[in-house]
Length: 355
Image 1 (tube, one colour):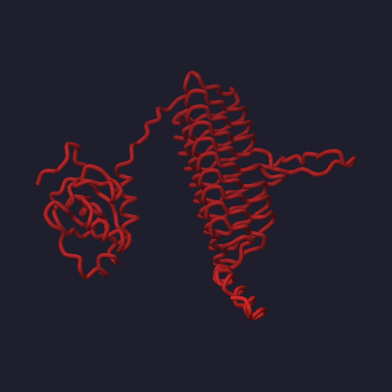
Image 2 (cartoon, one colour):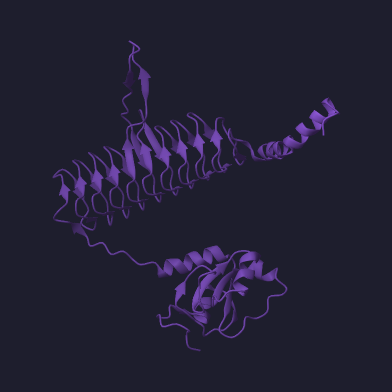
């Protein structure tokens, strides 16, 4: 059938189901022209339903097609074949399937190899011929930039920085002296790697503060992605380390001498004080603060806006301010909800003449 849109067709529903290895319910000829949220997608739109509520929303919407998780489709006994002009594409996991679709549709940035004439590259730096160095980039002495690495406009590399193959440093990134960026790393705009750690001590005369020098490095391992305006401070001595595959959101602060494990997730506005250690696979929600010298065990999860003052064992979920095991915090919250009623009852018991 023809698509109900003047926009170019990206996929037919049947073709998309085949590419995803999915089962199709509905119209295989439905033309899909865009990916959109269920509430705003039209008859040629594609969205996704990860749960029963979203599937019900799709059913009542004008969205033409949706990716739906198998478990959700199987759990809905009222799910008939969609009417003409609509289609459900049943996949193992709707989120992962949508990620694949977005990957197919994402524009491919083209970065021509070579050094832009308005870049400043120290003669002592080594730039692989396949790397792309954009306008306004400054590359300091003794730097090494690997194969197919991309330094977008206005990136600054200090002395002795190493950038691994296929890494992309977006506009305005600053990597200070001697820091190491692994292979396949993405640093989004405004990231600062290798600023001094925040270290001061009272001066002997008691009239001010003395700055503690930080002479270590930051080492970012392969496959890390760091969001816009995040900051990773250099170590006092040794290395601040970000483990392979870790993903860090915008506006995150990682203090000096932190050691972040592999495949961790750190959400926006979180802050790690100095010498915090995260095991592999730790998940930190937005706005979390972690005190210095704390250890968070592998696979632990910390809820949003929590303040962590203690070590957290591996695999546990903590939440609250101060953070405690999640079950304990939920019991405290439930007890707090009952407090007004308990106070009223106490006052009546103390003075039966009231109320």
